Amino acid sequence: MKAKRRAALGALALWTGASAGLAFLLFPLLALVVTATPSELITGLHDPLVAPALALSVGTSSASLALAVLLGTPLAFALSRRTGRAVGAVESLLQLPVVIPPAVAGVALLLAFGRHGLVGRFLPDGAELAFTTSAVVIAQLFVSAPLYVQAALAAFRRVDEELLLCARSLGASREQALWHVALPLAAPGLLGGAAIAFARALGEFGATLLFAGSLAGRTQTLPLAIYAALESDVRAAQALSILLVSAAFGLLLVVRSAEARAAALDQTREHAEPKHD
Image 1: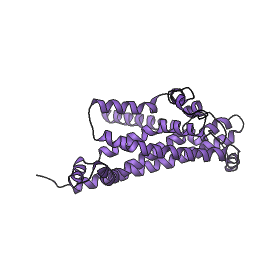
Image 2: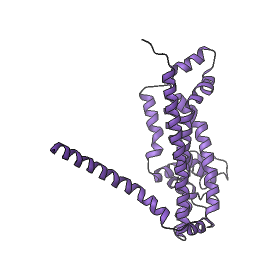
Image 3: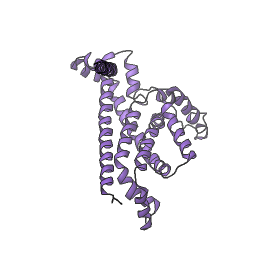
């Protein structure tokens, strides 16, 4: 009886803690939705800040995602086919933009691409990257590309090396093996990584504020518009926040779907492989 009582108390404590943790994480999101009427949110979306910020965010996030895929896919494939301490060190360096404070990322971008930065000083007279729309794309790319690369790495590492060797033995080049074998097999993981990277770019704030500023219609993305709206119209900030949360939730559903497809493909390949006694 004592053992059953201890087990029951343990289960009660576990579920109480789990419920408290879940409530703590979801309550702010619930408050975001229920503290304004639909008409107030619609009115907030008509704020002059909203339309330019939405268009800019979608455009710059799409551009940064395209660059992340273009640059990150070959990088991830190259790293996935290698092992050793050097590869581990490179992977750790690639994760740094994700974990460093946003202010540090902004300062680093200014020192690299600002007017007197390592790259900026060599730009032609009159050309400048900082505090332009291009700076928004660069800031978003800097913080989101590592997420895509990590997802792509995991996806490529699930691709059986023997399939690539088989393609090479049939006359395919390394690039052809990447395009015709590795990419189709890794596609679900790449899609999930792209969704995560887009969500991160869409929500980027700190590095963008320091490196690109908050110029309406030029560098003011949705997170920066939320910050500006808090000073004048809380409902506009709330409406924009719900918009970003909805976009993030939709992208997370894409990630979960991609993960499920990847798991299903892995199971299919496992069952398709011949079993040796």
